Amino acid sequence: MSSQTLISVIIPIYNGSPWINQCFNSILQQQITPDVNLEVCVCNDASQDDTKQLLNYWHTVFQQSSIKLKVIDNESGTPYGVLVGYAKNKAISISEGTYLCFQDVDDIMMPNRISEQYEKAKILPQDTIIGCQFKRIPENSTNRYTEWANSLPKEKLHIQIYTSHGPTVIMPTWFCHRKVFNNVGGFSEGGKGTPEDLIFFYKHLDLGGKVFRVDQCLLTYTYHLNAATFSVQESTIWKLRLQRLELNVLSNWEKFTIWNAGKQGRRFYHSLSVQHQKKVIAMCDVDVKKVGKAYIPFDPHTRESGTPVDIVHFKDASPPFVVCVKINLTNGEFEKNLLSLHLTENIDYVLFS
Image (cartoon, rainbow, N blue to C red; front, side, top):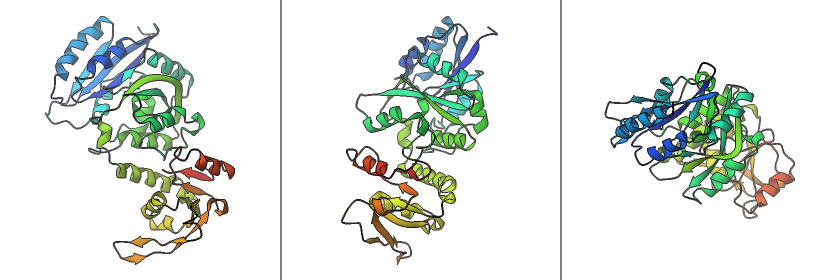
């Protein structure tokens, strides 16, 4: 036993009875080698269904396969919320594994998930978050997001970090050395609606942490309206991404152009601090109805108009750019236009959409 590597599967649960059996079965069916031992660490966050009874049942089932099931209960009667990080932190607090494998109770591991990610973890630096490709159920739910997350080039996993509502490798696929969690200091417990995964991911990157994706589908990711993700407002994600962009990118630029003179570009301009609004030298677009005119910002609070911002054709615009155009929505026209300028992402432009 002393020569085995312990991997802790971390599962936060609130009213998980519809999914516990399929989730735990997928853990039971993991194809692990003799040098690996598993434990399953659960925080039962004041569930009001029969989660507790199911956990008692699975304690015996796992024990028969030499897998230890550890459970810590929030017995206050009031759930603190799995999304805000409380339950993840609590589950990790009772874990002992060298590696942490994150799993949502409504998702299903493929039989080779842990073995594939563990093999990569052994050869990658210990400060690496390792994700994987996934499939959604029901099929055809969030197609664009799934395709983007599964196909984003690996060299862009730490670059294209302002284009989605979450990290470039989704939280339920994370596998990492315990040092990653310790270095970041745990998940935010900031309250309901806090995007704790994105906050953790940004801090991980700020500390020099690395990101890797195993290019195999190792997880079935369930899409349903009761998922905790839906409690996070889009405006909260926008604000978090903007704050990091201003701190880590725009503060190093003397001036820049906003690529998109439409709704998203204007929203971005108004979201900027005054300091960074002053750095905007133009907006660029392809719409002939906009090019050659100017956007005049208007502050509804002061009822005053701001300094006009010229709108130019993208071919006449000066980098660096903050690109406020959603990718893969124009039949490749936007991507072709961007490619024609021979720019380098993260130096000459940043995608923010």
